[in-house]
Amino acid sequence: MSTSPSPSMSMSDQTRDENKRSVAKLFDTFNHDDLGALDQLVSPEYVGPQGDRGPAGFRAVIAGLHAAFPDIHYTVDDLVAENDRVAARWHWTGTHKAPFRGFPPTGKAISNSGAGIFRCQDGKIVAGAIETDRLGFLEKVGAVPENVGRGPAPLAPAAAR
Image (tube, rainbow, N blue to C red; front, side):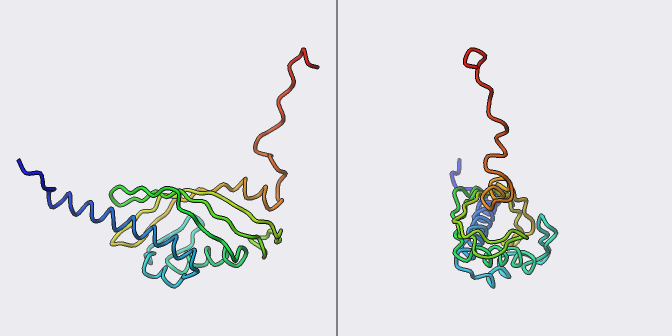
């Protein structure tokens, strides 16, 4: 019995690893403000969650973040790949120095987390489903009251009232 991987298994592993490297490079471009590299990482067929298309659409979203948070830094916490999908979990930090999506600058250090599943083809990202802590972000920029997601404080037991 042979212990070497079959050719199809090796190709699948190679594809998975290539896709994982592409997504890791994506976050690296964010940190180095090297948005020109998105042309090699994002497919022209890419359609993002907001309808942004291709590398230019992806670039516009990231450029908006960089404009509002010039010192933004992403940390990838988890990166897992299977077949043509790569799941990433990350957090970022940055100082809110300029308006962002209608929210005036606060001057505060802000952190936020997110996760996404990226679909890759031929080494490029062709689709992405992304979820971020939007409520936490809105609290940090003062758009909604702090702890609004926690709901009202629990009532004290009847004996304590």
